[in-house]
Amino acid sequence: MIISIASGKGGTGKTTISTNLAFSLAQKGHKIQLLDCDVEEPNAHIFIKPKVELKETTSFVVPQIDEEKCTYCGECVRVCAYNALFVAKDKVMFFPQLCHSCGGCAYFCPEKAIFETNREIGEIEAGSGYSIEFAYGKLNIGEVMSPPLIKRLKKRIDEDKVVIIDAPPGTSCPVIEVVKGSDFCLLVTEPTPFGLNDLKLAVEMLKVLKIPFAVLINRWNEEYFEIDSYCDKENISIVMRIPLERKIAELYSEGVLFSKELLEWQDAFCKLFDSIEGLWK
Amino acid sequence: MKIAISSMGNDLSSQVDPRFGRCQEFIIFDSETLEFEAIPNEAINAAGGAGIKAAQLVVDKGSKVVITGNIGPNAFNVLAGAGINVFAGATGTIQNAIDAYKAGKLQEVNQATNGPGAISTVPTYR
Image 1 (spheres, rainbow over the protein chains, first blue to last red):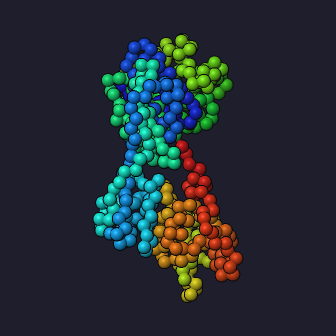
Image 2: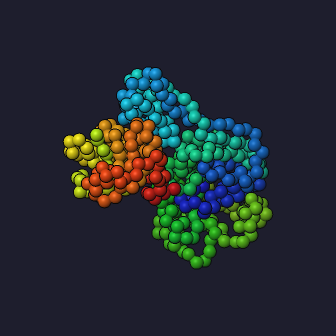
Image 3: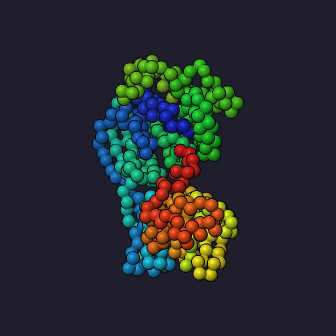
């Protein structure tokens, strides 16, 4: 079973939930794989403290132009949907950060002056910690194109295990790349107007992707009930509430899984998994 | 010589559009014939690389000078690479900008005057 943890809004606790869920299930003997797909800002490894057994770089195919053969006809510029190429009368300029690696420019170049070359965009590290098989991606600084790295990381999915995937925030391409193919998506939100606003966007995204989902409210307090009203109205299950508690925050700030110290939470996370399984079936 | 000016409208009384890559239109003004042509900026809604696409548009029109409010790094680099002189900080109408350019009152820039426009001026949702 593949469960992705997404949120809409950043900073609601996706990593907290994915790591504690993975840890609690592993403690009860489940075979768990955790993938941190928030490659722009991976941080699950801070909590899992994995022993890294494998490192591999990921690259991305980009065009390289043979200026000897180029006639500056501009066909590549017309083909490029991402404006990654520019041609003047005696010059071609290429902007790798804008390239989506579609290969169109090389395919359509009438002079066969464009060939493809690899450009490194990031790194994947894999290993294990707390009996969890763990892997994460790290996008190189300055890179903007995370989906190819996410795709590569998702190739590691082992369907014989319970796979928990930590997604990036938002509802754009990287998030869609992460959550597609999941059996279930858990949306982590917080009791604030921002949390609710972005939760709604994430719900719309999952409806389009036809992925079943439920909501978890983190830093729950008894002051803001709009999330409840919204979920009630939309018939969305709220499967867990984690209260705003100083001890949880302190453990988090020290890079410690709170379910490791506050043992009652291990059962709570196992129950959360049961409810997810129930909703999925 | 052809001069491209980023514009909010399609004639010489239109206001200069302070953005280059995502301006509404370009006025291509010919300083010899004093004629002009307005071309809609196809790059205005580009997801990314608007400055590059807009620059391609004005270069393809044979412009040698660009007058605008602000210009981002990608657009500046391609224009500089194509040997175009870029003047920023223009305000008022297109006619005002042309007059200011002729009077030598506009500042030629040798680097970008702002960040990539899509990032600094349009709220992007993450």
